[in-house]
Length: 121
Length: 348
Image (cartoon, rainbow over all chains, first blue to last red; front, top):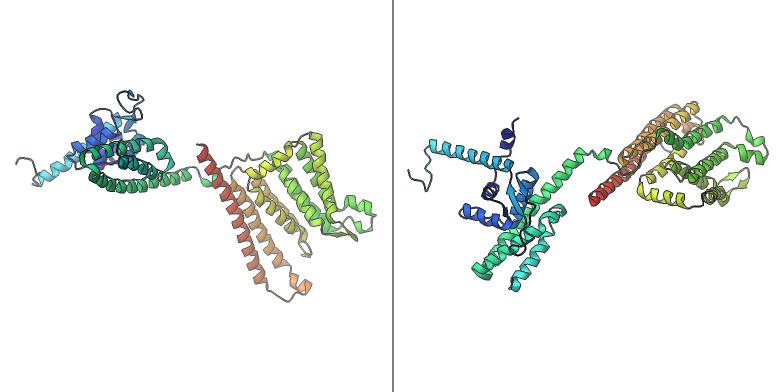
């Protein structure tokens, strides 16, 4: 079984997990920034709270989708207890496969004549 | 964080986080609390106390749901770990004995079987001998001397694990003979004196109480020794075949000795408490079968003119007795395995 096949078995991702991966694709972030960015990029549709967020981050760390940065922020500029996370190549691959899956679903819907609200006909 | 509400909210949330599994708390609790605090500050600045109240409602649901999933992952992972590290093979830190050492532990069991056999054959005709000779060559007394010598050697060697077999038999013998009349003499508490003498002499020769400390710490470390002590008691009862006049008695004594010896071998050769208990229970199960053969080949009711009870009743009692004893032993093994698992987790 190839790596993409193995990763496809982990799909579909929950919206929260997918948005977290997307938030980290834009750059390394700490927990609170991830939480804000997820809310922003989903137009408020996905609102994470700390428990769910760290449960997700914990599992992603275990699976090697993200990793924690060794560097700590400068105490003068940021809270030094904050930890920063980075998307790994594996995490990016998972996000890409999930996006591909969603795109395929979208195409199927369009082929069935489903009109996507907000898009011009 | 100026508002007392925010300070209070922070404290309560930290308290709630204590409900999560320790592994999660150790790594993520501080961060989770910090993100919640920042979120509270931002919400309070935007929407005041009203917004904070709504945030708390959502946070409570999030806290409860996250708790359920975290504990689910934690427990399932534990179960997986248990299957991977077979619970039956879980060691409690007790080092299995080498073959030579196991033979040392086995000797008193084989010795008692042999003594029982000699006693049944009555080849020594000791009743016609003077008392001082009887005290030396009476089979059971001779066995006790040999057990005490074994205990003495084990104490001199710093009390290796096989020493418990000799200690167990020495205590059992003292308890058994202290209430016995021997050619008209009441032995009483005096039977304990040789045992006490052996311990004191060995400690004096070693000039250290280290063997005694090893003995006591071993009892604490190896809980299954309690079951082993019970096993010695029943081994003694089974091998003695007291008042038994089965025509195949000698074969039964030999079979019982070998069977119970097999249990001892399995017990001392395993590092897993459950396997040790299974070895002892297995031997007792085989002994039960030997007991059934004894019952089928000799009718003690007719021999002694006993009118109450039936053979079916005897079988039922034997099976119940075996089940209860085995369950107690297995519970002891499970408890020791669980305790060792807990200690490992604590150290990790």
